Image (cartoon, rainbow, N blue to C red; front, side):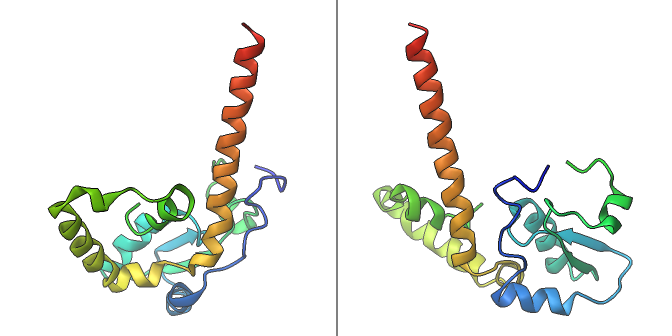
Length: 154
């Protein structure tokens, strides 16, 4: 990965409650979590650590600008609460059309959103938007290119 990757220059650190969590977990611990605030895969691990109250040190890292300390450890290195992405970019999932299932869905999402581990692992929505928007444009561009190539070959 190079600095030309579109995510190389994302907002540099966690914000909101997630920033408080980073501060609370910044002291030296045997378990270290190298994490980019925007990565849903890292969030999975982070949630387990928080839910199980496992002591850990959170080390903020943009994976496209890996520090020497991370590279020394790993030189070959390389969704329910983000459902709002579908509402924002795709007009929603039309869950309201599910009747009684809608109430069950809302109850589940409300319960999840109340979890401290969830609140402490999410940054502010405004910093996620450019990431998801860029992904959407990339997908559209890829599809447009595939269509164009297939039409040329006919």
